[in-house]
Each structure stands twice: as C-alpha cells, then as structure tokens.
Length: 129
Ligand code: NI
Image 1 (cartoon, protein in one colour):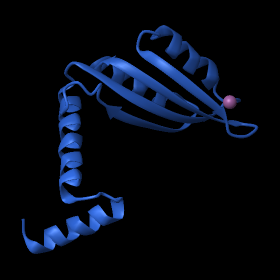
Image 2 (cartoon, rainbow, N blue to C red; image 1 turned 60 degrees about the vertical axis):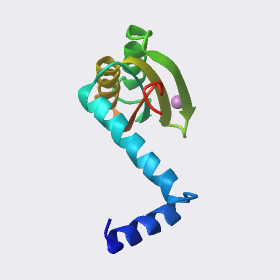
Image 3 (cartoon, rainbow, N blue to C red; image 1 turned 90 degrees about the horizontal axis):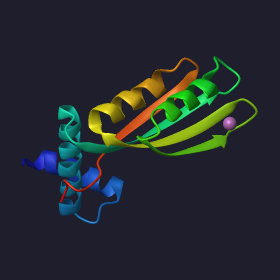
Image 4 (cartoon, rainbow, N blue to C red; image 1 turned 30 degrees about the horizontal axis):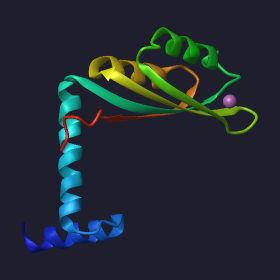
C-alpha cells in the first residue's frame, strides 16, 4: 500500500476508534463478505428495518401491521416508539432466506406514508469467521 493511502487509512482508524490496523482490516473484509453474500442472495440472512412514519396518514400503521402478520415467520421482533403526537419510529428485525428478507424490508420502506426507511442487511453470523 502506498504511503498516502496508508496515512489516510490510519486517520480513518483513529477517527473510528479502532485499537489497531488489523481490527480495522478485519472489519472491512467482513463487511465486504456480507455485502457479497447479499449481492448473491444466498442462504439465510438477517436484517433490521428502521421506519419513521406519521400514524395518522395513509393508513400506514394498519398496512405495516398487515405485512408483518402476513410474514410472521420472517419477523423476529418489532419495537415501536411514539416519537411525538404524530410520528412513530419502528424497528423491525427480520431473518430467513435472504431473498425473502430483502423483499420484505424493501416492501415496508416503500409503503406510502413512510417518511424514512433504512435497511441494514446483515448476516446470521455462521458463515463469517
Ligand atoms: Ni406510535
């Protein structure tokens, strides 16, 4: 690796609070491997979906509930926080076949009335050292 790149990497490591380069490199490699398994959508996977929506609007609460009941086998847990009079924050944890997990996560984010949806695609961990 050339000097300039290594300097930038060391600055990144310090900002992120890594103890050393090895730990930072391990994290980069693991992230890449998880991304690749998602690109190929192979096997079992896990994900979290974070949703912010106004529960008064677009019938969004009921439609979210319908989706979650319809796919109960893939939904591990849902946490709901009432942010203020109108807005709700919901975090949904999913696991199952990667293809189904992704479709379900995207379906929830795309619901009309969802102001912000964020998906974190992760792994069940077994395939990762
Ligand atoms: Ni609420």
